Image 1 (cartoon, helix red, strand yellow):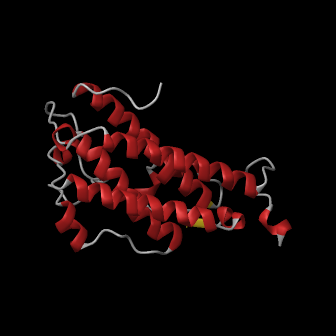
Image 2: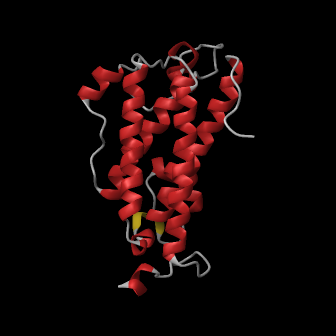
Length: 203
């Protein structure tokens, strides 16, 4: 059994799966800690601040990344999203959509209605990811979650560029859809924090 836990993950230049998974767990925890620090140091007016046409508010970046991670979990694990009508009533976003397939013009009006409830939703989504990673068998990382040829909506994504010859693996999905995607939107949030007189999250 110990040998299986140290299985080598294909396509990672011989890095043991257990080592790779440990790195993922630590990086994901660090990423989520940035989001917790960010929301704790912003109020709802700063999050919903409208700078000007064409500039998305922090509310968009926050709701988008959490709702996308929640939605992605279905493809990755077969587990339905947490978001449902009851959460919509509690969080009350101006646009109850992560907006991945919408334009900036459509999503510039995103606002978070109940900031405390949004933070609770974020915590539930992030906790689920961390619990899942804590229990994940390293051998699962090579499982293909979207096989080639990719549908049009997937073919234009960053994860499609990362994918190997068989398609997008669970490792690709975890890295691209949660970790790297989360860092991308944290960068947006850090920039937008400057517009409302706040500092960045890290040096």
